[in-house]
Length: 177
Image (cartoon, rainbow, N blue to C red):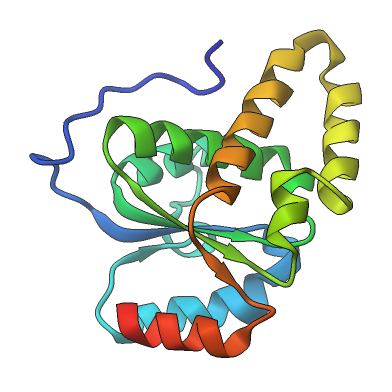
């Protein structure tokens, strides 16, 4: 079942990236705090970053522009905050990120923003609550929800950073920057 418009993808070996990093995050949660600091830090290092409020052109259909930016990025930093999965747009974005990870070799770096990685993987707490609501809203198209769950599990199983341990995150950020 296709959740996203199909697009042609070239192999990662011949791809010329428009962005070094695509930031995926729930805006209401962390746009003006963590994400803003990360964005500024990456830009100061000369890293080309796509952040939805920064790069979208006025009048552009947001979903298509976001999906194109994911395809044109070399890395995706997925910031899994408490309410990330309450947004169907975040889940559509996440599904595209996983698709590009598998097809073009997009490197996905999850950041667990003060959430337990186990809760994300197992859809407990706010993650489970959000999916219960999605299941109700999409009961006639439950395949969407199943695809979103699979994408979330795949990303949550990747090695990432747990912000509950700030020192580990800062050390890793300095190492990779």
